[in-house]
Image (cartoon, rainbow, N blue to C red):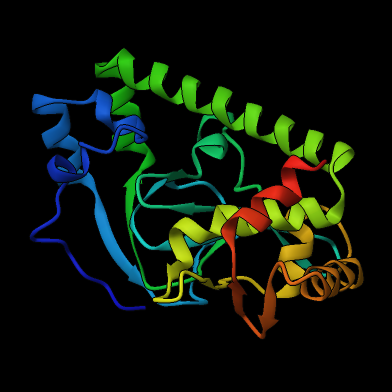
Length: 238
């Protein structure tokens, strides 16, 4: 694994990301975080931490996109969510005092900061606002999980697939000169099926239906959406 210590981007420059829990730190506490972190560069497929391993600290995504995967007893894995710049990983295992409940690997070249648990404890003791920020993050994650369950029970697979494409377009999409949206998927069909809560063969049928109706065309991991409004209509029609 390639290791790189950041000289340009520091916790001070990352602090402007309103979504990060670390934004509650300032002055000496922010300096302490900046000096305690270790920054690594991960290439696609490289594992950041493993499900079941002891929690040694908390990770923060500086740049890139990573997958959080759950593994079953047979070794099969599914992506339960993705994280990108400003997101914090492993904090639930840290606060629960348990091993990591999932694994994480890079989907694209990513810079990940690691803060060991002793440094995190010191910062929590010195700055209660940091603890409150993590409580807010837990509440937000819980709301997201409940919304995902609602989608799974109330929306068709076709609508859930359309919603996933809309989520991915901001990070992995580009609009061509003809106005068509092109998305380079960071996920396999199996991963997409797991994220929308269905089986790969059901996703395959939803893909064919979108192609037949001209909403989107799929070529490997390349998706072309001729008219974004048609994709939005897939969700609004439910």
